Image 1: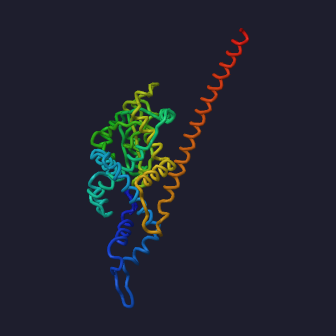
Image 2 (image 1 turned 30 degrees about the vertical axis):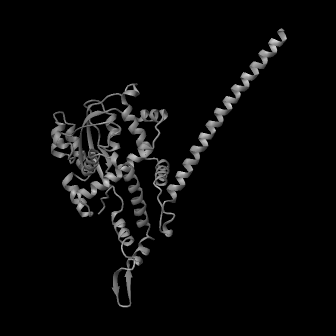
Image 3 (image 1 turned 180 degrees about the vertical axis):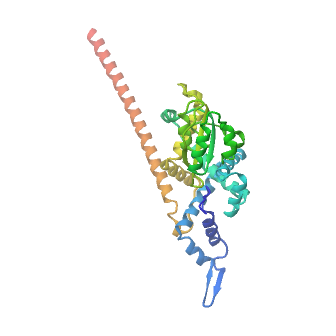
Length: 344
């Protein structure tokens, strides 16, 4: 199955967990002339790159869930669940996919909570600067209202576009009849989104923001990031708007953009995870896995060293400024004293 859930490698984790628990001498299988024990299986399983990655993710998610899990609300889980479900064609289709992948809705929601706890933990470690906000402003577009039609093939998209551009065409009715987007088709394809929204692909947002009110786009191709298939969109702009010059008006949206930029920054993410692992005092008890988290820990130590160096530089600079001020004051006082002495 090509569809890929946004989760850790659960099948690999299950194997690793099975091997790592229980009586190590317990027999898993026997045959003429030999046997395979839990320890045999564990020793084999732990050398697998896939299993090591699964264990690494288990540790990271558990650490973040323990510290930041209470920050994740049911509403946040609902939103994430529904967003993923829509990419699979709706809740019924998605639940079938979950079942085929060995999940229940409950177990998948538990996984989502851990993923969201990781996200919340990373955000809690962010220091968003004025420069970050200005950079976010450069790429920001405020909320627009539009209508969309999504179809599975380019040929279907071309046919829909031709129909939609006829003088007497009703875009909303065409959307109800032809669109495969379960979230919008019943409402005639109506949707609102800004540049921070994940409701539509980035390719669709980019094309839509260039449209004038009432204008219809050409066929837009976009990759579904969950199914890795190409989908095709036609957009009609209902109400576009300019962002103006007031950044403060969109402070929340700009903060979200800046946060998402850092969430996609591997240097920040690895170092932050490393710092949280250190704070949680994570220890690997198996010497063969001693270096499992070394990339995270090294990145955290490098970040700490850089921060200490910057702090020392700032302290030295402040001390130098203070010394210069004192020297200036002493020089001024000496000059004044000399002037007074001369006057006498």
